[in-house]
Image (cartoon, rainbow, N blue to C red; front, side, top):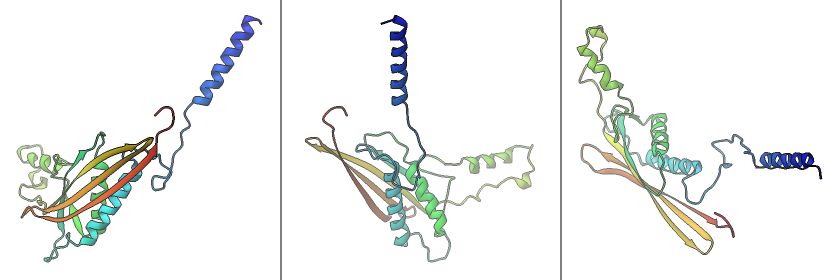
Length: 204
């Protein structure tokens, strides 16, 4: 067979192989159930489940309500990642913060947090008192920021097990709200997610 023909056949086969193995990407509904489900990882749906159950439990508990009618100020402390994965627990805490605000039962502060302020501007603008470039009557004054009454914290724990080709991962989301005046836990709840998957005969 002519070498040119053999070379052409080789190019065509390679092109067909690369085309067949190319990525197929699509957008999915983030609120639906089309996302990938993995055994060992916290998937986006797991975050949604944990946040929704935690939010419902917290809001239904009534701990955010005050007898004096003033809205509780809630700060986001730390949610410890005690799993084998590297992920940002802000995926959970932001959902909690936004739901609390939407409920109208409390306010949240971004001026202080377990890992430092989410927004350092509250402190930065008060340094303008020392800057003669700014009209001092427009500068935010010291002693006006409102300190939080409660803090939201938690921990995510992972446990793995296997039996034959079957693998199982258990995720334990612990969440709590603490009264900052007394240090007492006013609310605690857990969300448990278990996922199983069978290892194929080859690979994985």
